[in-house]
Image (tube, rainbow, N blue to C red; front, side, top):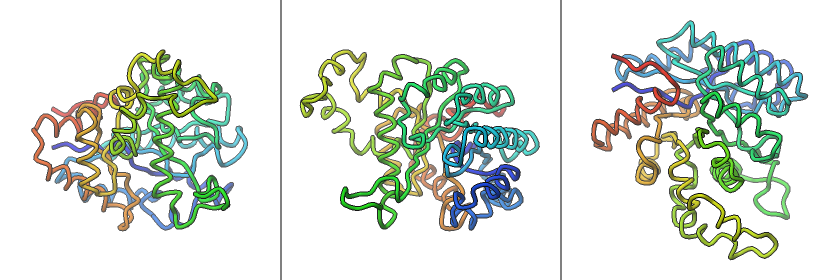
Length: 340
């Protein structure tokens, strides 16, 4: 079985060094404590644990924080170009380890769509966007050009959650989200909210060729199928200050159908068999890609890869479904050459 890890993170040396120079506080202590995310030799050692036995390779993208949070547009443009050039070089020089990369964009710059076009020309297989842009929703009109360019280029968008302890508190009378609630529960909410904004803003209807993947098996959506389904079939019944009833009537499909069929998802659920089964029962198999979220496990690299492969092999799926999730869907979505 071939395994293509569709969503895992690595910083090319030049962009890592530049970020450490200009915004060292933004690369948190956890990132600096995971050599596998910036040290190529360490990363190769990690991949080698699975490369031969499981025919395993990776599609890489930058880790947190979002580039647009690091400074003015000119700086972020430089960081994005540095990241994309670096990842393109890594893929070209290490094809047995990295079979593709997701572009990074200067989303606080009006040149973001141009950088996406350039990144695709040098080999980007997709693009990573965060679920908000310095607090703005993705359906803000100023970002439409990026989505339009992605649809034009048939470049899949991968949504990565973004939220910090001081961005939103869990209680309105507090100023900070405690106990890392902002990550454990806040990130799945961020992803789900971003999906909802794309659906109800009409983005998926305006750009019917747009391909969007929601990280972590669609976040909250599978577990909340009842709320997304019959719950949102009653959109507007709970609201008096806006006319959501007309919005609902003008949608081309039930809300549930957008969430279920118009998004791709991945298997990166931190080694949870229960979450995997829930997501697999909800999403069509042709919409699911294998991913581990390497290297953010307690072992700082191999843990989630090993656990996610073990879960896949334990589910006793039909061979054709296993092949779809483990590599066929990624090959099609990323335009990666299938193995003979």
